[in-house]
Image (cartoon, rainbow, N blue to C red; front, side, top):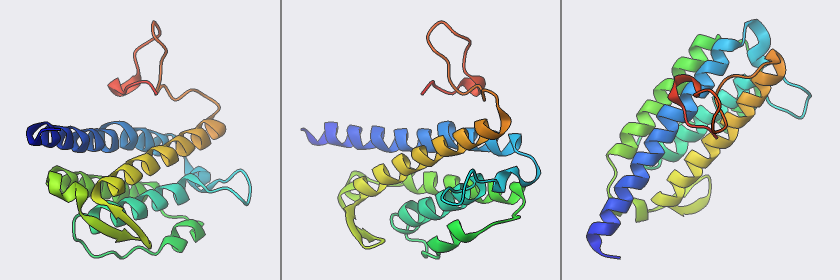
Length: 179
């Protein structure tokens, strides 16, 4: 592949990562947090499952570690076990604000990366990865847990959250693409 094509592909990859984090997944999580009242953010269907609150803390920690720290050079202060041990109550507005800040920090890091950064070797949580693999992991991981947050919210609210539509159905809320 020619250098110009590789550079264009790298830019497209990074732009898509920013788009998914900032424009697709974060708004869905924020909508779920807005729908949940009182202790619902900390509700869990059983002892083996996580609450929405735990998942938000986990996404904040993971994205901060894999993108903001590993690729952006910020200190890694993550304490992963605390993300799952927390039982609340951390106010929903604080959870939302922390995640919002981390997503926007991560997106600024991604927007500043070069093609060379995608091939840079990193060690994160003991895994040896490239920058490309770290970004792919972080976005995929964010998507996975966003789906869990949506499911937990639907279970509690007993209604469609309006994030998706099939061809010919109503448009999606907030202009989000169907999944």
